[in-house]
Image 1: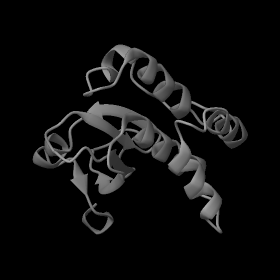
Image 2 (image 1 turned 90 degrees about the horizontal axis):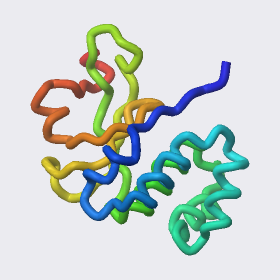
Image 3 (image 1 turned 120 degrees about the vertical axis):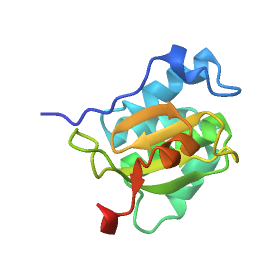
Image 4 (image 1 turned 30 degrees about the vertical axis):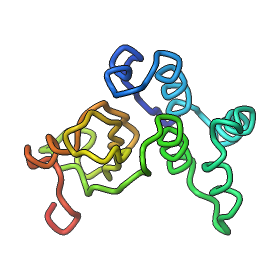
Amino acid sequence: MPIVFTAPPAKKLVEIKDVTTAMANEIRLIWKMPTSRLLMEHLEANADKFKCTLEWDRQCYHKPKPRELKRAAIDELIGTSGVEYLGRYRQVGGCMAGDMVHFCNGGDVYATTIVFIGRVLRVDYVGRLIENNNIAEPEQM
């Protein structure tokens, strides 16, 4: 069974500040890219948009995992200040329980941004996740 990455529709992604419909469609394309080879081909074909991501990949002795490259490329595309690790998702049951949570850092925990929970890309804001006690470190799980 193939690994499935899920993302909201483009209509939801354009709720993020400065994200256009074209950008939203590209975010979905990148996140759902099935193989690292196709991902790299896409990034290299659009090198003008993904200079930092490609440079980071070239500088690494141990190549980043495809999911890390996807997060970095999406961060670069929407112009946020890097991908940050938040903790582990605390959910009673469910498929995302214990998954690592990362987000595109827009500088404001109450600004709508992209949140990555395992293989799920969501439009959310970090403040809500923290206030609702959805984040836990592994030792608190």
